[in-house]
Amino acid sequence: MFEWNDEQTMLRDAVRQFIEKEVVPIHEELEHGDTPPYDVLRKLFATFGMDVMAREGFKQRIELEKQAEEAKARGEEVPEKPTRGEGGGGMDPSFTMIPIIELCRYSPGMVTAMGVSMGLTSAAITSRGTIRQKERWVPDLLTLEKVGAWAITEPNSGSDAFGSMKSTARKDGDEYVLNGSKTFITNGPYADTIVFICKLDEGNPPDERKILSFVLDSGMPGLEQSKPLRKMGLHSSPTGELFLSDVRAGRDRLIGETEDVPAGGREGAKDTFSMERSGVAAMALGIIQQCLEQSIDYAKERVQFGQPIGQFQLIQEKLARMEVHRLNVQNLVFRYIEMSKAGRGLTLAEASAMKLYAARAATEVALEAVQLFGGNGYMSEFKVEQLARDAKVLQIYAGTDEIQITHIAKDLLRR
Image (cartoon, rainbow, N blue to C red; front, side, top):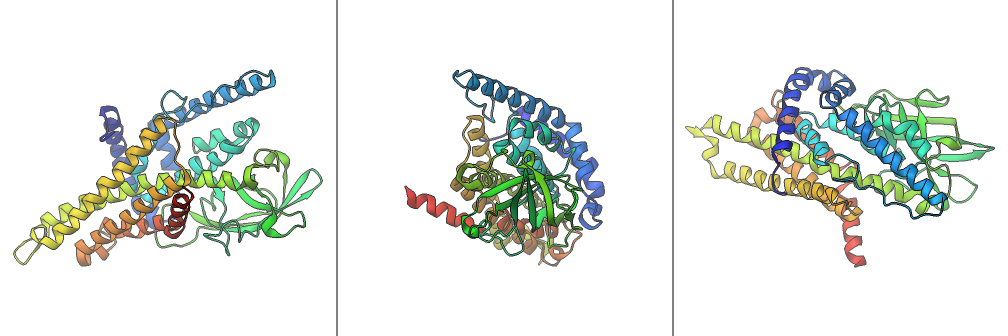
């Protein structure tokens, strides 16, 4: 795959029209008025039938899982799980990536809010949960009827998410008592459904404790959700803190309904990280495309020393580097789409490499766009100012650049 086909191009153009009509007019409210993005995202889903496709795809996958369980119970050969790509009961992955790319041309924060809810939160339940748990929580997350949050980061943890984790689950009869706090949680202030990751406290040392994940609902006694935090960028993505004080959760809320989870529960979180990191490349592509287009137009129109600044070699060098980054990140996105169609997921190292390059490219392009615009680029009335603030977080969340380098290098050294 080296370019969008006709069907994909039609979807891209339709999404652009929707954004121009529904997002651009309220852009200032999203960026500066603390207006949550969920209503306009739901409208996007409904307009393009994404909600219907998500529900139908979920029903097909659950039906296959039920058939597999029944076959296993009868001692028969279990059918292979469907892939995410074509022929596997799921939609073409490009139909997910295109809206991400197009929204990030204007509002990367909206994509973060959407991705954490319908992507990370639902994936955490889908990958390890029981059929009953999936049917209980996942459909509403996939359609944004319910807002989801994936809570792993804590005030004293960041890159060392597991080692520094203080949140605990303590068994009390048939229930668990949860305590702890989480920060930098996307959708935290408005989340209806929260995947809370913590350590099982059995009186053993913290570094020996199992990692468990629970599904919580807003309003549960002892669960407090903060107001949105102020931050550098991604203003259209509400970020908050969570505080748990003796929150009681039954086994039905423990993902998988068992404490015997693979690799102590860390593998499930790593799978979620891989998914999040691959999505960053699509976000980066949208930012890069918009910055490049804005820069080209400005270089043609802005006149200094008697000629358009695009005639100066230093400006041409900036534009050329932007185009190189655009091509490379686009190729990474196309590769991911083709791999997904073939039923092959990215390894953690591959996802890390994809995120590392794309995040650095988007940040470089956005900052160079500000430089090209000069004083105007520092003013909020010009879009490149916002995109430069938004791009920086791509190097921080879903694992910092430094963590990506570690994952890539460790994988290389194991070969």
